Image (cartoon, rainbow, N blue to C red; front, side, top):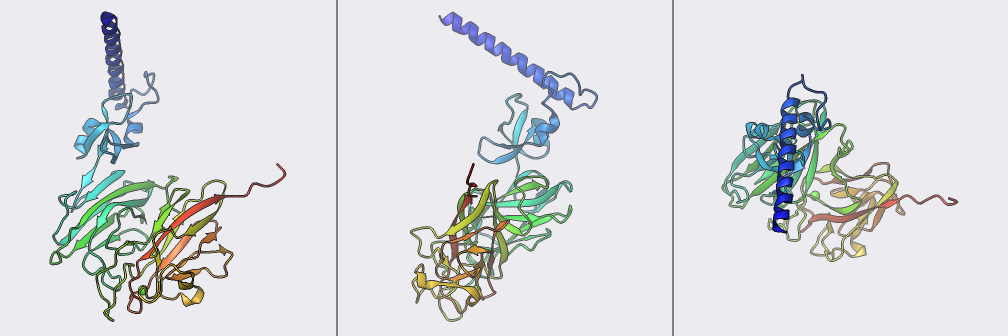
Length: 381
Ligand SMILES: [Ca+2]
């Protein structure tokens, strides 16, 4: 019995060795333009490897590359990315202050990550689009925690500024784990991602930004005008720096400041799948502060129907949901949010804030759930 198993194992090992030999020959042949015909695995080419996104054994996203290419580019090999050959590795790129590159995916981290950075100065990573087939940069804030804004929502101590693209990207700070932004490239001009921190203010600053190039032909490309683009058929949307705690900063009236970022004006879009007709936004249960956009949290009970304000009375900080059904206005503010359904060609809402919060007290922004709904099936079928 044991000898049978040994023989089977030997045959298996020999088969693997033969296969790997064929494939590695195939790879080396493919690097030469003179050898493009009649290979054992005609679907398997170097070009195909180089262009594929992969997930490394550490869970990070990388680019499938031949091992030597990964080493030469300064990447870290994180496991195999092809079942056909061990020469193809999932190549992960990490960088910190002063870095630049054109990789499909790069992780831009604070110095010493995952430990926090307590110092000051500016830290920039520059993304260089390889050519004009790349249209957008998606930045996922795997981690991004820096100081809170001042009481008016201005990021005066720490902030992130993203420049060089063809759209204005708001300056943000505070707690933004899990947030993301899309930045459209302006031709092949580079985009700078700059994090500025004030060393004289002690704070455990942490960032790990996933920078992904989005091809013009990609189904993940955001529609024009969308700073954020949510791909799931349902999910949650939060304003930048939304959180359960209050901002400790006091405003000019010695009242609790806001967590909302000042001077915002951006679009939040939801992907509209095939056969989908509408999207509904609602507040989650269990968080009375989930819509505290304008007003005084101390004197009005957040979440009560009476605390909701709509229409032209919303003129400082507010959400616009175009073409909502069942209501006569598209503006929403105050300290509560009525469940709202919209059925525009592109699912979008706009978030606008002004430059101060002196008249308000203790607002936190919003945390809404969304769910898309399929079109009604025509009767008589
Ligand atoms: Ca305001």
